[in-house]
Amino acid sequence: MSATSAGSRLLLRIATRKSPLALWQAEHVAALLRGAHAGLEVELKPMTTQGDRIQDRSLAAIGGKGLFIKELEVALAERRADIAVHSMKDVPAEMPQDFVIAALLARADPRDALICRRGKTLADLPAGAKLGTSSLRRQAQILAARPDISIEPLRGNVDTRLARLENGALDAIVLACAGLARLGLESRITTRLEPETMLPAVGQGAIGIECRSKDAATRALVGALDDAATHTALAAERAFARTLGGSCQSPIAALARIEEGRLTLRGLVAEPDGSRLLRDSVAGESASPETLGEELARRLLESGARELLERLRSA
Image (cartoon, rainbow, N blue to C red; front, top):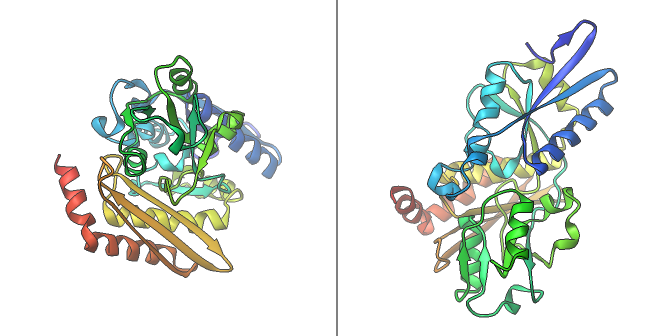
């Protein structure tokens, strides 16, 4: 059953996490779909995922970001929902065979945000300052720039993380600019971290719409929302991560930019303690994004990333 018919009504059901940010994203997609298709009814099906339930351990320790979407995919498979809406940084590079990302909305700011209690930049933080993040990617790049900073684990929704900062438990935290903007919290950003300092997660800033691969009717409906430039950029970034075999346990980052038909892709693989950052970039025609992503991954694997990632996976 796709885009469920109820009498003469056409109904599309969205599986979403219950966090304020996930609900905002699902409501945003619902509004866009209603605007694109006259008479279409859209209904949200909020769910709590395993990633939401386990808050006392890092994602790396409990199996990775895929835990945020597994229950949503089960709802799709059992036809309790027609689409699922995701932050693309939470979607593993390897998609299950029966599912597809049918559309990507235009990407928001992909950068990370530094939010401080005092000071304005990373350099302003005092020696020994406590910075909250549970992302190995963020941890590695922060420690590469400031090895004297103490990294503290930080999980939970945006409000929970901000509360840890406000109650004095932390001196600074790092969150995604896009999520803060979507929640109306852009004013909380102290500094936007440029990619030279903090290369973002693969897919960061992009919202994706997933559905069953064989559901042609739903794919056609959501396809009206697809942004071609975002689709191309993420094809390169996700091919990079897929070729590396990267996961939440791996400090991997990538960002693709498209200008005048050419795509530039920067990538990074890092030691979690920031002692070694392997960086490289490729550029080429935007018509071949996956080829560029695979090329960049192979270059980094040959320059030492293979051994680094194998050691992290075995650990």
